[in-house]
Image (tube, rainbow, N blue to C red; front, side):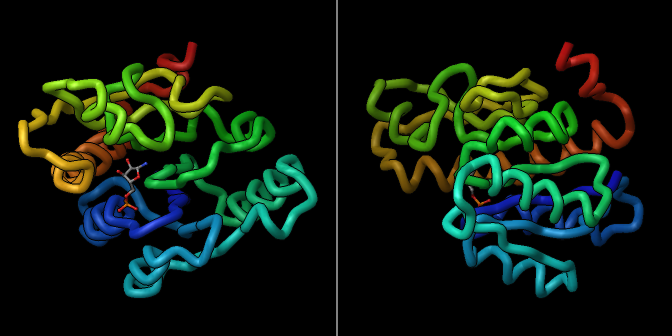
Length: 195
Ligand code: GRF
């Protein structure tokens, strides 16, 4: 399964995938890593010798034009699936149309609870005792697409946003590696899930 991975930040989920893909027995390959900014996580791609690209919305007149540039870059690598792993922008409709349902996202909460950019903070503020991580198909909403898999993480009384997010990210790394494997082995069918 050929992947393009999109990131905005530190790229710890990307790194987990890069490490998994460096095992020949793992059924996926990362063809390229894309970012919306000069993300620190692009260093992981360089370390593993994987090409990368940056398509920044600031360089385009509007979201449609930005989306077209992103689509063109991604299509250069002919991926079977696009993985948003800490990509902190809402994708324009043209990008969703171009790749969905073969377009998945990792979110640090148990969707449909706590969508959006502050999921960890929102779970804490809500007094939740359990949250988690979810991999889902990207549709045109914000964190609304069909859920592929999720894992729970208990919230401790003394958790801060940072400590809780760190524990969620540990779970996310395993979840993304496991989910991509299941999709590659056709144990999960994205077309069916998106119906
Ligand atoms: C992850 O928690 C992901 O769920 C969220 O942003 C974080 C990205 O972390 N969308 P990293 O860049 O993979 O380290």
